[in-house]
Image (tube, rainbow, N blue to C red; front, side):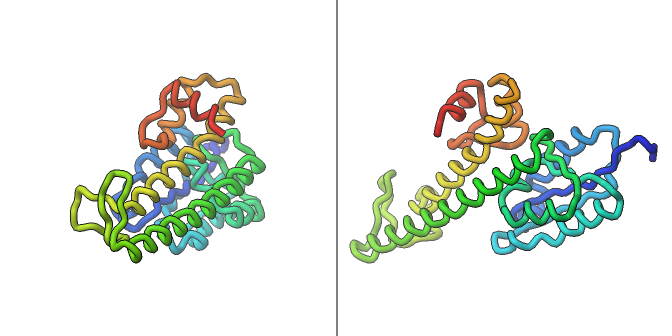
Length: 233
Protein backbone atom coordinates (compact mmCIF):
# COMPACT_ATOMS: atom_id res chain seq x y z
CA UNK A 1 0.00 0.00 0.00
CA UNK A 2 1.39 3.39 -0.96
CA UNK A 3 2.16 5.77 1.90
CA UNK A 4 0.04 8.56 0.43
CA UNK A 5 -3.08 6.39 0.18
CA UNK A 6 -5.83 7.22 2.64
CA UNK A 7 -7.16 4.34 4.72
CA UNK A 8 -10.88 3.73 5.11
CA UNK A 9 -13.12 1.29 6.93
CA UNK A 10 -16.53 0.93 5.28
CA UNK A 11 -19.73 0.51 7.27
CA UNK A 12 -22.97 -0.60 5.64
CA UNK A 13 -26.34 -1.07 7.28
CA UNK A 14 -29.51 -2.80 6.16
CA UNK A 15 -32.69 -2.65 8.19
CA UNK A 16 -33.99 -6.22 8.22
CA UNK A 17 -32.70 -9.77 8.16
CA UNK A 18 -34.35 -10.29 4.74
CA UNK A 19 -32.53 -7.28 3.30
CA UNK A 20 -29.27 -8.48 4.81
CA UNK A 21 -29.60 -11.92 3.28
CA UNK A 22 -30.70 -10.66 -0.12
CA UNK A 23 -28.29 -7.74 -0.30
CA UNK A 24 -31.18 -5.31 -0.92
CA UNK A 25 -29.73 -1.83 -0.76
CA UNK A 26 -26.26 -3.11 0.01
CA UNK A 27 -24.94 -2.93 -3.56
CA UNK A 28 -26.02 0.69 -3.84
CA UNK A 29 -24.20 1.56 -0.60
CA UNK A 30 -21.06 -0.18 -1.80
CA UNK A 31 -21.12 1.66 -5.13
CA UNK A 32 -21.38 4.98 -3.33
CA UNK A 33 -18.47 4.11 -1.04
CA UNK A 34 -16.30 2.91 -3.92
CA UNK A 35 -17.07 6.10 -5.82
CA UNK A 36 -15.88 8.17 -2.88
CA UNK A 37 -12.80 6.13 -2.01
CA UNK A 38 -11.65 5.78 -5.62
CA UNK A 39 -7.93 4.94 -5.60
CA UNK A 40 -7.52 4.91 -1.83
CA UNK A 41 -7.79 1.71 0.18
CA UNK A 42 -10.64 0.12 2.10
CA UNK A 43 -9.06 -1.94 4.87
CA UNK A 44 -12.25 -3.78 5.76
CA UNK A 45 -15.99 -3.69 5.15
CA UNK A 46 -18.58 -4.21 7.88
CA UNK A 47 -22.28 -4.85 7.30
CA UNK A 48 -24.80 -4.46 10.10
CA UNK A 49 -28.15 -6.22 9.79
CA UNK A 50 -30.43 -4.23 12.05
CA UNK A 51 -33.88 -5.32 13.15
CA UNK A 52 -36.55 -2.97 14.43
CA UNK A 53 -35.86 -4.02 18.03
CA UNK A 54 -32.07 -3.72 17.91
CA UNK A 55 -31.55 -0.16 16.69
CA UNK A 56 -29.87 0.84 19.94
CA UNK A 57 -27.37 -2.01 19.63
CA UNK A 58 -24.88 -1.94 16.79
CA UNK A 59 -22.08 -4.41 17.60
CA UNK A 60 -20.80 -4.46 14.02
CA UNK A 61 -20.48 -0.68 14.04
CA UNK A 62 -18.44 -0.89 17.22
CA UNK A 63 -16.11 -3.35 15.47
CA UNK A 64 -15.78 -0.95 12.54
CA UNK A 65 -14.96 1.93 14.90
CA UNK A 66 -12.41 -0.21 16.72
CA UNK A 67 -10.71 -1.08 13.42
CA UNK A 68 -10.56 2.63 12.56
CA UNK A 69 -8.97 3.37 15.93
CA UNK A 70 -6.41 0.59 15.51
CA UNK A 71 -5.43 1.62 11.99
CA UNK A 72 -5.91 5.39 12.14
CA UNK A 73 -8.48 4.99 9.36
CA UNK A 74 -11.55 7.00 8.42
CA UNK A 75 -15.01 5.48 8.79
CA UNK A 76 -16.89 5.83 5.50
CA UNK A 77 -20.67 5.51 5.25
CA UNK A 78 -22.75 5.73 2.09
CA UNK A 79 -25.70 7.79 3.31
CA UNK A 80 -25.94 10.33 6.06
CA UNK A 81 -29.17 8.79 7.34
CA UNK A 82 -27.18 5.65 8.19
CA UNK A 83 -25.52 7.78 10.84
CA UNK A 84 -28.04 10.37 11.82
CA UNK A 85 -31.06 8.54 13.22
CA UNK A 86 -30.03 8.38 16.88
CA UNK A 87 -28.56 11.16 18.99
CA UNK A 88 -26.96 8.76 21.46
CA UNK A 89 -25.26 6.88 18.64
CA UNK A 90 -23.89 10.06 17.07
CA UNK A 91 -22.58 11.21 20.44
CA UNK A 92 -20.84 7.86 20.92
CA UNK A 93 -19.18 8.23 17.55
CA UNK A 94 -17.90 11.68 18.48
CA UNK A 95 -16.44 10.34 21.72
CA UNK A 96 -14.57 7.60 19.88
CA UNK A 97 -12.45 10.25 18.15
CA UNK A 98 -12.78 8.46 14.81
CA UNK A 99 -12.90 10.56 11.63
CA UNK A 100 -15.88 9.80 9.42
CA UNK A 101 -17.28 10.80 6.06
CA UNK A 102 -20.72 10.38 4.47
CA UNK A 103 -20.58 9.89 0.70
CA UNK A 104 -23.83 11.74 -0.02
CA UNK A 105 -22.73 14.79 1.98
CA UNK A 106 -18.92 14.74 2.21
CA UNK A 107 -18.71 18.30 3.56
CA UNK A 108 -21.09 17.71 6.45
CA UNK A 109 -19.50 18.44 9.80
CA UNK A 110 -20.21 17.10 13.27
CA UNK A 111 -22.70 19.86 14.04
CA UNK A 112 -24.63 19.18 10.82
CA UNK A 113 -24.96 15.48 11.57
CA UNK A 114 -25.84 16.08 15.20
CA UNK A 115 -28.67 18.39 14.12
CA UNK A 116 -29.89 15.82 11.61
CA UNK A 117 -29.84 13.19 14.36
CA UNK A 118 -31.91 15.35 16.68
CA UNK A 119 -34.46 16.11 13.94
CA UNK A 120 -34.69 12.48 12.78
CA UNK A 121 -35.12 11.16 16.31
CA UNK A 122 -37.82 13.73 17.05
CA UNK A 123 -39.63 12.83 13.80
CA UNK A 124 -39.47 9.13 14.68
CA UNK A 125 -41.05 9.80 18.08
CA UNK A 126 -43.82 11.92 16.56
CA UNK A 127 -44.57 9.36 13.83
CA UNK A 128 -44.65 6.55 16.36
CA UNK A 129 -47.16 8.42 18.52
CA UNK A 130 -49.32 9.30 15.49
CA UNK A 131 -49.36 5.67 14.34
CA UNK A 132 -50.35 4.49 17.81
CA UNK A 133 -53.10 7.10 18.02
CA UNK A 134 -54.40 6.20 14.54
CA UNK A 135 -54.41 2.50 15.39
CA UNK A 136 -56.32 3.11 18.62
CA UNK A 137 -58.85 5.32 16.86
CA UNK A 138 -59.50 2.73 14.15
CA UNK A 139 -59.67 -0.04 16.74
CA UNK A 140 -62.36 1.82 18.73
CA UNK A 141 -64.44 2.38 15.58
CA UNK A 142 -64.20 -1.33 14.71
CA UNK A 143 -65.24 -2.29 18.26
CA UNK A 144 -68.18 0.12 18.08
CA UNK A 145 -69.44 -0.45 14.52
CA UNK A 146 -67.89 -3.80 13.63
CA UNK A 147 -65.84 -2.31 10.82
CA UNK A 148 -63.89 0.75 9.71
CA UNK A 149 -64.32 2.34 6.28
CA UNK A 150 -61.07 3.60 4.79
CA UNK A 151 -60.81 6.64 2.50
CA UNK A 152 -60.62 4.23 -0.44
CA UNK A 153 -63.99 2.78 0.59
CA UNK A 154 -62.64 -0.53 1.91
CA UNK A 155 -64.35 -2.03 4.97
CA UNK A 156 -61.84 -3.24 7.53
CA UNK A 157 -62.90 -5.56 10.35
CA UNK A 158 -59.50 -5.90 12.02
CA UNK A 159 -56.07 -4.34 11.94
CA UNK A 160 -53.07 -6.14 10.49
CA UNK A 161 -52.95 -8.51 7.54
CA UNK A 162 -55.76 -8.95 5.03
CA UNK A 163 -56.69 -12.01 2.97
CA UNK A 164 -57.89 -9.87 0.07
CA UNK A 165 -54.71 -8.74 -1.77
CA UNK A 166 -56.60 -5.79 -3.27
CA UNK A 167 -57.55 -4.39 0.15
CA UNK A 168 -54.97 -2.46 2.15
CA UNK A 169 -55.80 -1.96 5.85
CA UNK A 170 -56.07 1.72 6.68
CA UNK A 171 -53.42 1.57 9.38
CA UNK A 172 -50.90 0.13 6.93
CA UNK A 173 -51.71 2.91 4.46
CA UNK A 174 -51.23 5.44 7.26
CA UNK A 175 -47.86 3.95 8.19
CA UNK A 176 -46.76 3.95 4.55
CA UNK A 177 -47.69 7.64 4.28
CA UNK A 178 -45.80 8.42 7.49
CA UNK A 179 -42.76 6.57 6.23
CA UNK A 180 -42.82 8.55 2.97
CA UNK A 181 -43.19 11.82 4.87
CA UNK A 182 -40.23 10.91 7.04
CA UNK A 183 -38.15 10.06 3.99
CA UNK A 184 -39.05 13.45 2.51
CA UNK A 185 -38.26 15.26 5.74
CA UNK A 186 -34.86 13.61 5.98
CA UNK A 187 -34.16 14.51 2.33
CA UNK A 188 -35.06 18.17 2.87
CA UNK A 189 -32.04 19.16 5.04
CA UNK A 190 -29.77 17.34 2.58
CA UNK A 191 -31.25 19.41 -0.28
CA UNK A 192 -31.05 22.60 1.78
CA UNK A 193 -27.37 22.02 2.48
CA UNK A 194 -26.65 21.48 -1.21
CA UNK A 195 -28.62 24.59 -2.11
CA UNK A 196 -26.63 26.63 0.41
CA UNK A 197 -23.52 25.47 -1.43
CA UNK A 198 -24.91 27.08 -4.60
CA UNK A 199 -25.84 23.82 -6.32
CA UNK A 200 -28.68 24.00 -8.86
CA UNK A 201 -32.03 22.25 -8.59
CA UNK A 202 -31.33 19.71 -11.34
CA UNK A 203 -28.04 18.68 -9.77
CA UNK A 204 -29.69 18.45 -6.35
CA UNK A 205 -32.33 16.17 -7.86
CA UNK A 206 -29.61 13.90 -9.22
CA UNK A 207 -27.83 13.83 -5.87
CA UNK A 208 -31.05 12.95 -4.04
CA UNK A 209 -31.83 10.17 -6.50
CA UNK A 210 -28.29 8.77 -6.32
CA UNK A 211 -28.52 8.76 -2.52
CA UNK A 212 -31.76 6.76 -2.68
CA UNK A 213 -34.20 9.43 -1.50
CA UNK A 214 -37.76 9.43 -2.82
CA UNK A 215 -40.62 11.93 -2.83
CA UNK A 216 -43.65 11.42 -0.56
CA UNK A 217 -45.20 9.47 -3.44
CA UNK A 218 -42.16 7.24 -3.80
CA UNK A 219 -41.02 8.89 -7.04
CA UNK A 220 -37.65 10.15 -8.25
CA UNK A 221 -36.77 13.79 -7.73
CA UNK A 222 -36.76 16.30 -10.59
CA UNK A 223 -36.14 20.04 -10.72
CA UNK A 224 -39.73 20.97 -9.86
CA UNK A 225 -40.05 18.42 -7.04
CA UNK A 226 -36.82 19.71 -5.50
CA UNK A 227 -38.20 23.24 -5.64
CA UNK A 228 -41.38 22.08 -3.91
CA UNK A 229 -39.36 20.19 -1.31
CA UNK A 230 -37.36 23.31 -0.43
CA UNK A 231 -40.47 25.52 -0.33
CA UNK A 232 -42.35 23.27 2.09
CA UNK A 233 -42.12 23.93 5.82
